[in-house]
Amino acid sequence: MTVSIDKVDLIRERANVSYEEAKDALEKSSGDIVEALIYLEKDEKIRKERISIGRRVNESTFGQRIKDFVKEIHSHSFIIEKNAESIINIPSTIALLLLLFAFPMTVIALFAAILMGCKVVIKKKNGAKLDLKKKIDEAFENEEKNKSE
Image 1: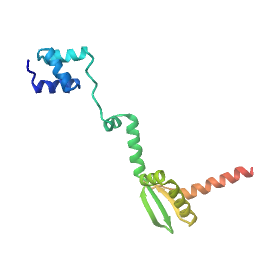
Image 2 (image 1 turned 30 degrees about the vertical axis):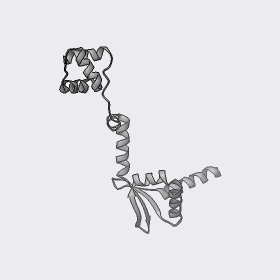
Image 3 (image 1 turned 135 degrees about the vertical axis):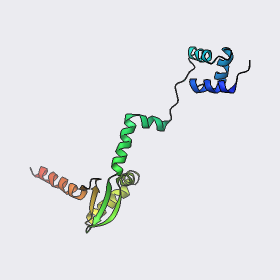
Image 4 (image 1 turned 90 degrees about the horizontal axis):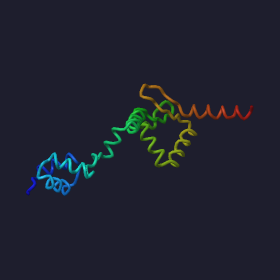
C-alpha cells in the first residue's frame, strides 16, 4: 500500500512524530488517519508539542516578570553630572551590564567620579531623581552614629 505525503505530513503535524513513525502508523492502519493516530497513541509514540525556549520564557510568569523588569530598568537613566552639566547619560540597563561585565573598572570609575565632585544620579521615567552620592553619604553618617552610640 502506498501512503501519500499529505497524510504523512498530517500525522506528523498532529502527533509530532517522525516521518518513519507516521508512515509506519499509516501503513498499519491501511491509510486511515484516525486509526493511525489511535495506533500511535496506544504505542505512546505521540509526543507533546515542542516549544522553543523563547516561547516558553514569554509564556511563563517568571519570564514575563524578567521582561517587565528589564523594560522598567531600561526606562530609567544613569547620569553622572558635574556643575549641573551631564557628563554621562545612559539607560540603566547599559549601566547594569557595564557593572556586571566590567565590575572592577566600573567601580573605580564611579569612585573617581564621586571623588571629583560629580553627582551620580538615577533618573526615573517619571522625572524623579535618586542621588546615589547623597545616599552613600547618608549611609556613612548613619554608620558613624551607630559607632559613637
